[in-house]
Length: 115
Length: 115
Image (cartoon, rainbow over all chains, first blue to last red; front, side):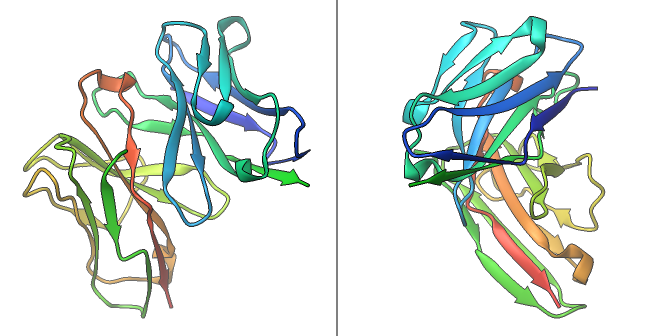
């Protein structure tokens, strides 16, 4: 069965500092991986996704993530945090077994950005 | 820009009431999903649909029911609301052109509180 683990339910960084949000997955087949962001009182918005092409994926708002098969990881990074990055971030893997298309989510990481 | 709408955004209702959460998308997507999200927790799939007249239950058992009479509309109904139904409900859709690699687009969610 596929699963996702996000290390650290809360991450706090200073404005301008590096953002690193960790995601590890478990999958018996090459996975499709997603990062979504949820701002307060809003739905989820796709930041980026990995679908077996380039292992370094660039997304919106300056975020990127690197797929590392040997480490079963898909960590999200941004070189310089901005106050507007404060939100909840979810890593997800797409269920490839069956035809549901469902996403299996991690528990989320709340990013706090301090001035 | 994805166009998927949910109403109401917030609902506070008494035990025993029947409620319907509305979800509509204007993208012509065949696949639609309902996820349930408790505070600080991951999202869990409760219902999905492949298209008109197709509905399936997801991983998380739910007393809610859904219908798909039109492509663009995927309402969720609770016949008799209980406090245990208090949660956030998120609707999503995808066009399924790339199967599990497709992006799911999310609505803003309905935050339901049952007293």
